[in-house]
Image (cartoon, rainbow, N blue to C red; front, top):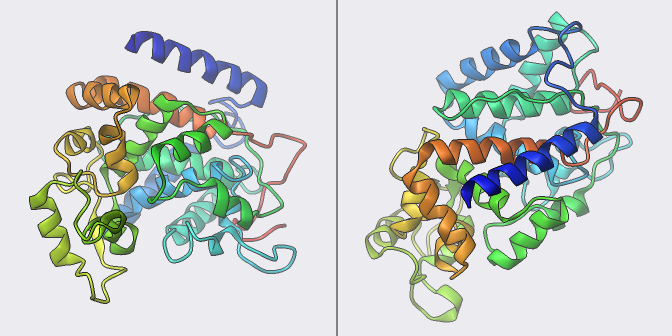
Length: 325
């Protein structure tokens, strides 16, 4: 069954690649060192900020779910951009890593001016972040162009939130051509990084008006989280490890945490606690086989990176990722 799922995803990926005119060798003659340039800057950033890998991976995710993978999430408000996606609820005071993207863009421009899009930089930075975190590596397909509009409303409505039901998030994935396997595989990006108390404290004290914690959380885990996120405290922005067992490593412990009722966000734990036989089966499979998980994650990242990309002559190659040319 698992092999058939992977084969189906692979076929879908190949179709998307063909339609999108993307290729892993797109810059082979115009900027052959782009992947190593991106990796070098990400590696340097990780030395002072162990969170940055998760943050860059999340930026790519939040970009692709709005207008496709066009780097619209990077645009600042101003000029023709009246409402930036950075101001949308899923991004405001939460999305980060923009300064590292600027450093990557500067390094790439110094080597290959006017050639590499910011959208491709986001895709490459996500791959480098996962790989440097101990996860799999893959050949990133390239050739995207940068969008010329931002869509704050789309960001508010299309990006999955930590408070939604599995049915709602499944619908949001389906709306951009991703299936339930993609949902489970991509959710595992929460195997590294942090989350603020405000994104899960509704689970700790008064779940659904019961006056008690979410019963799908381990009692010992609840107790430790309640200390970090007190009910009447001002700790909404306090950071907590998404994966309490290996917070800065990309591995399959995320799935073991779900089995042990230690999924930090509601949307994480629902993959195992919602009585959805497909997601439960995938969680069990990936928890027991990291190689299978890595293979599925790579396929799903490629699928996501192929959501409605702009290719020449559409869009532009921004010289500054924060603003239009």
